[in-house]
Amino acid sequence: MAKPLVALVGRPNVGKSTLFNRLVGEPLAIVDGVPGTTRDRLIAEAEWTGHPFLVVDTGGIDPRVGGERPLSVGSAEYIEQIRAQAEMAIEDADVVLFLVDASSGVTPADMEVANLLRRKQRIIEGKPHPPVLLVVNKADHESLRQQAAQFYELGLGEPHAISALHGLGIGDLLDEVVAHLPPAAEAEEEEAVKIAIVGRPNVGKSSLLNRLVGEERAIVSPIAGTTRDAIDTPIEYQGIPITLIDTAGIRRRGRIEPGVEKYSVLRTLRAIERCDVALLMLDATTGVTAQDAHIAGYILEANKSVVVLVNKWDAVPKDSQTMQEYTQRIRQELNFMDYVPILFISAKTGQRVDQVLPLALKVQEERLAHLPTAHLNRILQAAQDAHTPTSRTGKSLRIYYGTQVRTDPPTFLIYVNDPKLAHFTYLRYLENCIRREYPFTGTPIRLVLKPRR
Ligand code: GDP
Ligand code: GDP
Picture (cartoon, rainbow, N blue to C red):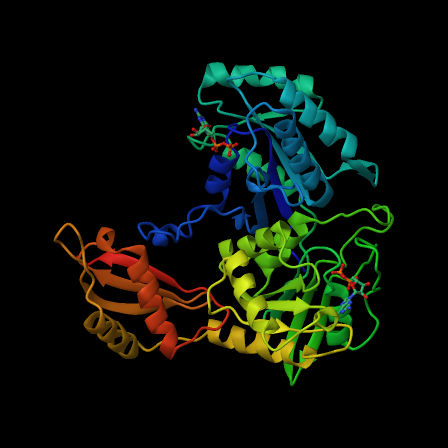
């Protein structure tokens, strides 16, 4: 089962991402110094006193469907966005941390968000759900801690004064968070390959799930966002245990009116975070939308493997070029490299559906592949011989040796004279050289450069 989800909400600049980083630590610090590989995470795992949970920074999520334009600070849309983020959190999180800023006092935006949170809480077993903890950040010293009391005004109970920047009050806050988490879910079935079916509403996720499961388990409906209950579906494919994680199916009965386009970013994020391989479903009849691109971005950020499924292929008029054209456009619009496999399917007729699981399992197998160091170094040496790194400044990159330090996702540590000399395009080239021999189909690989001591 899923780990509980703790969501950070609040207006910009109150310190959400600072707190996020403090809660999740810096497991990815190893990639520092590699151009183009450090991305801001939106969701990551954290743990306190033996209780694992996921933390999501809603400030990084654009909840507007198809929203692409940057918003100007203070505009009506801007407030709207903060409200939408808070709404997302209250619908899908297990605990909400509402951050405010001790140094600026209660602002009208804080007031609005607080009202919304209180209004949207549901009463479960006599208690408001999900619990909202009011966090007064930037309480860096005693006089600021005193300011915290004024936030009682927000009507969200006791303010918890912390300083995310200086690490003050974090332990007490986490004790409180853990006390509000739902009782520990049963442990994940560790040996099962976790495959998530993700995509915007109506692309055909439930139809595919039905096909894969081979029974009418999920209710398929032409109305986007129909209430369905399925969450994890355990299946077996040629003796291999698989857990299908379905994001379409997880809606609380009766809470969503039929016909309302309701797509849950947080559920999608959580499914992606939990999976080994994401099946990103697109609708061939509508082409790639901004929402598809957002989901693709989340998969990349999470360093997960991906297979793109272009569904409803039965409904597309085709000639001999059509598949090629689609492939190119999809890669471009989703910012996916050649290593991402694309399958054209029809959940309706069953066309190529039998290739979905074998491909996903192949991707997972390669995700776990380990390159022998000697072989890697032959690849790196040949790459250097074929293309010497050049530099405008006269000093150029030298690669000494490399080794694969982990799988899942595959991560390569490469010792060089000076990491700063590595141009992004050269790293791309090295990646391609590795993939020519070990394709790592559907899987991002990471190259971490270190100066040789
Ligand atoms: P977000 O927009 O809510 O994610 O806010 P950020 O985490 O980006 O923080 C906004 C600014 O506030 C940054 O300059 C942080 O360094 C600063 N900040 C965050 N937490 C604290 C804190 O506890 N004390 C102080 N003094 N500054 C903080
Ligand atoms: P979900 O919201 O992503 O779970 O999508 P559904 O599985 O509920 O499908 C949405 C609609 O698309 C339904 O009317 C399905 O019958 C239809 N649909 C799903 N797969 C296909 C397909 O391969 N071809 C065609 N023509 N329609 C499909």
